[in-house]
Image (cartoon, rainbow, N blue to C red):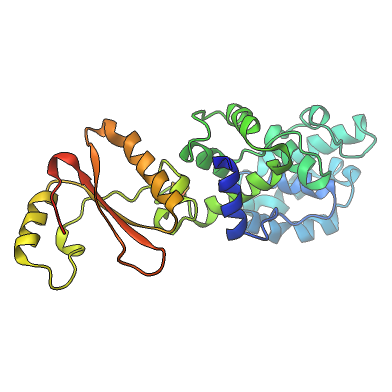
Length: 294
Ligand code: SF4
């Protein structure tokens, strides 16, 4: 199984009901909601749109809406001036060029004001069931880099890299899963790597921290051992983690090898069955400070 497929499988188990969280009933509503969601949360958009969609039901309604009236509706979401202009401009173009029907191709959608590839991908995949690309929002962009699936930062370049490695039938599912995981665990600041179900597959996991030996010293350990350990660790690095599978164990070892250019050569000191069942505790220290702790 490829690493991407493994990531999809684990995240699917974690988020079995992952679907788009914007509320909509037709392509027009999704177009408007997606434009509104820029720099806002889906939850906040969902609070505004029921009243908005009750007032304006067709492309013609939005194309002819009074600019200030629309701005008043959407003001709580921020960027309301540009969002109102995009919604009106997009709907005017749909009325003029597409017979008042939201187009269903990437080429046509991206001619609309305020609609780039990301918005077009959201509409095509969620409203029309067409997967022409992968949605790269802020979460997908960040997680793809952290997971080592791309080294790019430009969303279009990230999308190209992902389209090469993610199976096409999974394009929508994959981006939805990364969005859920980015919101729940892999935050922009302080990702919760210790709670992450794909930590064993992630080269960016953040769980190597300097620690003092007594934090992990079992009760009753002799003082000489403690002293040796203290010398070994007082200026060194120690990392412990529960590996739930051997696959995670081997992924973590690969990760350590890759980090050896940090001037730290890691070596496995002990691999101890200290928990229960198949859970293991792995402890590593830098080679030049290694000590026998058992
Ligand atoms: S291990 Fe950490 S950085 Fe990697 S995906 Fe999980 S939360 Fe994000």
